[in-house]
Amino acid sequence: SPVAENVPVRFVPGNHDTLFGGLQRYLYYAGPAGEPRLWQRIDAGNVHFLLLDIEWSAETYTKEQAAWLETQLKSIPAQDWTIVMGHGFYYASGGTVMGWNWYDNPETISALTPLFEEYGVDIVFSGHNHYMELLQHRGVTYAICGAFGGVPDPEPTYISPASIWRLQGEAGFVDVSIHGDEATLSFISSNGDVLKSFTI
Image (cartoon, rainbow, N blue to C red; front, side):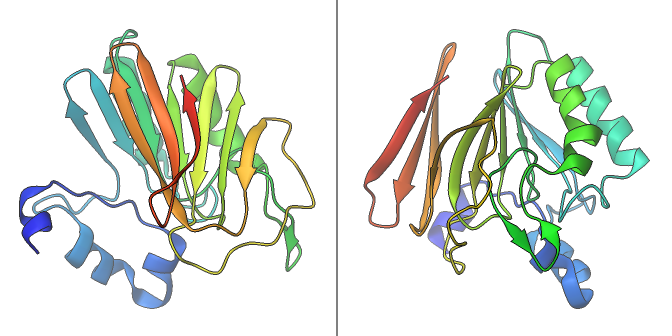
């Protein structure tokens, strides 16, 4: 499309992208040319995006990816913005589905959040849960927005202690605007209304 030809777009893989042999299709259609790896770094001035392969929980977080992530985090100046993106969540509200606790994920929390805290990650974006939520824990802001059009999750039976705001049943996305040392995260509905904004 005219937009896709002119606006750089990158994707992070999720469980539905890679299920049932979909990994090769994902890499063919969504992977950057010449970069078949499922994790990557994008720099835009003093804003650094680290895209991770966190499809469900920490099972796709390999030793190779962990070493790569720490190397990247070490190389980013402390005064710059560091934004991590991946599909699976860390801190989250939710409920129990088919015997699995679909909230505060102990596997991703133990494997990754110590690095986020040690190296001053500013914002971590994820999906997986089909709703919108903003959380903060030990200086790191976590934004969940899996509300692009899938079947909405029910109201949570567990509220994460890190939760600041959440909304179920509304389709939408997160818009981020960074100016100097401030970032504004705006949760936008499917018809373009601002549902909630936060400044970090």
